[in-house]
Structure formats: structure tokens, C-alpha cells
Image (cartoon, rainbow, N blue to C red; front, side, top):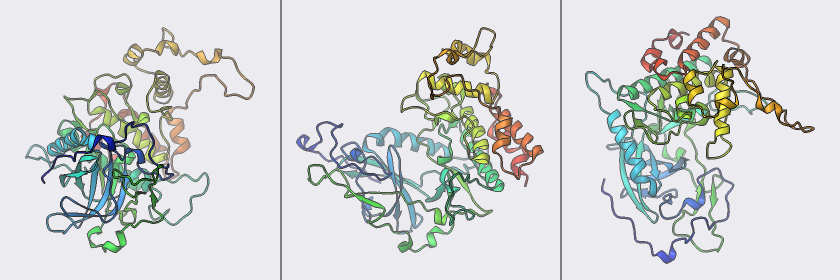
Length: 445
């Protein structure tokens, strides 16, 4: 599809300082309104057409740091009746979209030695859309139902129930196994082509829909109202760079397939990379980082395997295995310390490689690997947090406390052994996705 040059915007009309707020703040959980400026998001409203009228926007599906995602209606001739349209920020369009499309083109190939990619959401097509903020790369996808991160609240047993305080909602065991097995099939396809996903997490695992093309458009249309928030400039002027309103993302969870025929696909190849061309920054979620990511060492596809090991525990228990999180947008040494200490307590003694290359290991461990407790020397204040070093329980203890009742002691031992096999501090000793697919636990009832 043809692209065109970005419009010439008079410099006198461009916001002079990107930090100057132009709009009244919004309480909506949507993209940041101030990013509607040259180089930023493309302003879209319901009913807009894109790609010279080939797609008509009827619903917002979601948003992220670098894109918004919309449900579009097509003529159904060469594409499905409904498509998800990922619209990149103008300033990210060239690099981010090009990377995603390059990776996707490799994943779309197959021959007698490399089977067809399965359980990975690949672009159906792409085009460039011109707008007041520049040229925006737009990627078309099969519309999916809901993420694994949020889908647990939409499965039949919970959909119409009010969540009670303290209630822990978890996927039934058969669904957990299906989600994990399909994720392994996707990872196997990706890794066979020497690609690393780099951002494997529940938010990037999606349930497919069932029968969406048979749904009447009137059921899917989103209109301005309760799910939109009018954009207002502080100076009362009309803003040519922004849409008239922000819209909340409305997932297609109503049409997600939660039956035994359910299908899970790995999505978002924006952070994916080829094994021989790793990026300078890995975007794996903080708590799912493999040790080599924390140490900024060489990485390969085994960082995806590490994340997968964490997900086994997380999906079964609905709790994070390593309860660590960044204090802000930038990671710091103290947060890395907390992560390594959690690994040491939960998984077991840190490897020699980690202790040698972790710059601050001497603060926490003695010359013979003995655990030190520097925080115990800090002054205690009345009513304040106990400064002594917190020690996490082992994997075995945590799993026993958080597992579901239908997992007995024998099965617990099998799952714990599987997680320990995966979460090996030495990347080369972690199993491959293909090897894990052969584990009987994924195929048992």
C-alpha cells in the first residue's frame, strides 16, 4: 500500500516545549493525551476510515507506549471482515514497525526443514497512514479475544460474579496446561528461526476468538459516551493534532474461545530480535528477567525459556515467583540486588558466574559465599519497617502455600522439578522449547 510524505506543519503552530501541558488531565486508563503532537500518536475517532477507505474504525481495542490498536471493518474480500489495526506513533514508525515486519517475514517462511510457524500472531498486512502528526505505520492482525493476564476474570466461572475482597482467581489446571503448551509451540517456531521474542509475559499471550466474522457489526460498534473522555485544551482552542476524545480499550473477551478448543497465540514482536543481533536494551518485564539480562551479559533465546519457567508458577498460583519490581522507570543497582537475593533464596545458591559479575555481591555475601546482613546494622526506629534482611521462602514452600487444591504432593514434585530444570542459572543448561514439549506433564489430564 502506498505511503506519502508527512504534511508540512507551520513551526509557529507546533507546541514549542514538549513538556508544556496543553490539555486538561484525563482520569481514563488510556494513552497519554500529551503524546498527540507531531511525531506522536495518530488522532483517531470512531467511524474514521484508513488506507484510502479500505478500513473503517468501529472500536478501540487497546493502547501501549508506542501505539494504539483499533478494530476495523473491511469489505471481507481479501481479508477477514474484522481486523485489528495497530497504529504506531509517527516517530517510532520507521524503526519499530520495520523491525517487527522484518521479524514477522522470517517467521512467516517455512520449508521441509522448518515447519510453519504456529501459535504466533503475525501481521496480515501493513500500510502507512498520513496524519497531522506525521506518517504512521499501521499493521493489520487477526482480532484476538483477551490477554492471558486479564482473561482469568472473563472465563465462564468468573464472568458474571463480583470479585470478593481477597479472592484469588486462577485458571483451571487444564487451561493452564493448554496455555503453556501453546506458548511452547509458539516459542519453538520462533526459536527455530533464530529469533528471540524478548518480552514473553501474560499480557503478550492472547486467546483467539471464535466466530467473530459472523457477529453483526452493530454488536461491536463503540460510540462516544461512557467509554470516552472529551479532550479539552487548557486555552480553549481546538487542537488539530489530537482527536476529540480519548477512548477506553474494549477487548473482545465476549467472543474469546475458552472451550477445550481454545487457542493461544504469542503476540507483540516489537521487542523481538535475531539471536546474532541482540539490542542494547532488553525489555523483558522486570520480575521475569533472566540473570544474564540483569548482568547485561550476552543473551539468546534462553531468556524466553527463563520467562516461561516463571510463567508456569505464575499461572498455577496467580502470584509472581520473584516478588520484585522497579521503583521507577529506570532500573538501579539496589533493585538488581533485591532480584538476585530473591533468586538466591527461592531457587538456591547463586552461581559463581553471578557472584563474580554482580558488582555489589560483596555487600551481601562473604568470601566463602556466606550470606551477610548489612541491613541489620541500620538503626531501628519505633514503628518503622524492620531493617533486617528479608529472606524469601524456597520454591517448594511457596508452591505448597499457593498451589490449587487439585494438585497433589506427587504432581507438585513434578511441577517443581520442571521449574527448577528451566530456571538454571547457566543459560546453556536450560531446556529448549522442543525438549519441554516432550515433558509428560503438559500432556497429562
